[in-house]
Length: 80
Image (cartoon, rainbow, N blue to C red; front, side, top):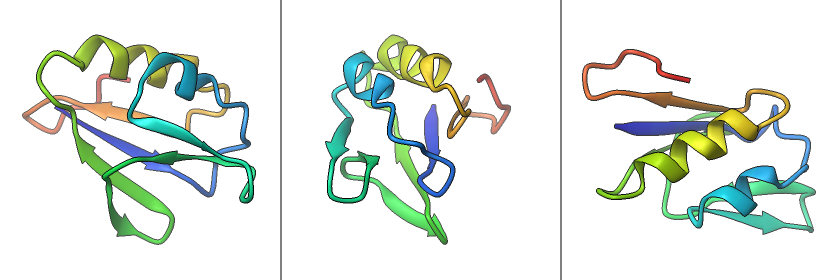
């Protein structure tokens, strides 16, 4: 499972930060940051979801009010 985060779409509500430790607050930019991720496209960051953190990743994706977080299974199918 992996997560993709579109930082350009993010509006800085930080709901994902409350749901999953992989996200942190970047107050200078007014957006969340996906810790340890790799930039795969301009302002799009990807991270493999560590074992045991799948539920937290799902909650983070579901709580994003602007759908800046997408979650994919191991086959590449979008879950959220």
